[in-house]
Length: 341
Image 1: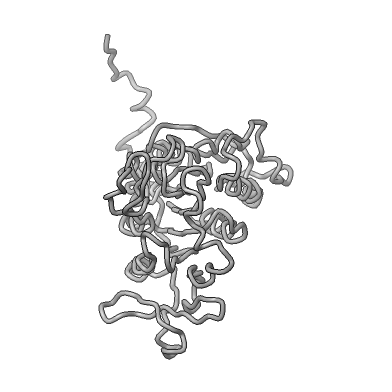
Image 2 (image 1 turned 45 degrees about the vertical axis):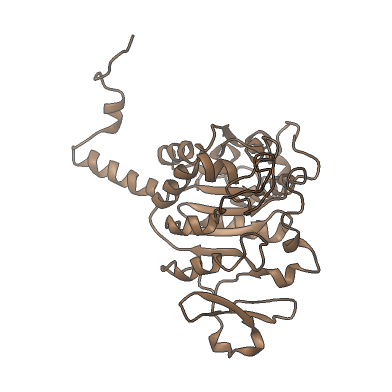
């Protein structure tokens, strides 16, 4: 983040552009935009030192609706473009806005390499389990059997689990939240912003036109307490309206859900987001059913410290220049160039 002093305290309205917000009425993107606009003043960073880079999709309209710098880039390549910006301008706070289709289909390779490099990016992945902008085809996160315009007999693809994928890429910050839970969403955004390195935040976002109700089980008052596993670092993993469900280890080293009263308190897993070992965090991502979302963990699954790629690169360039073994700026501005007719 920038150390530049902010002359006046910014408010949410200062981050609202004059552009008409053009999403379908009732879209979950509105709630996410409002949360981000309200949260950005907390960073204490001038608007001109923040940049949002997006790919292609409904969520990728984001840069138009913020008064920060921004770029609506090309399909799937937002993490790559943002990597170039973050490494060349370490004074900026760089955010990526993408969707499940944009990030996990054509952009899958770009996403995992940004995460493994630990570039100082905050990646907001809107997951509505459908292609919304192109009118309702199945996406990489759609459940098996999903009937859409492109899968009239039901999808045959096994869906990606974005958090499992991120942990497999050794991402240093991995979290999940929900568009309609303003407080939880803001808390997760705050934690991501404070992290040095790549932070992936998956946001379950309802597409009320092409996949309405996809997350109802996690939102309805009658079911959410029994289906959402709210992770809190340092606390036992129990959930349910009365705390009647608990997460314990199974015989194979994974995790399972049991009645809380059936086990001793010492058997209940304590959530440790700061563990260097990804095994437990990965096991948590496998608790939810990929079709029904039954027993879905939300919150910060992993938050570990590792030097960011851009900081290491800057240190390396400085060392090279001091030792007289290389000058990148001279190379870029030198005469060793050619012209192709």
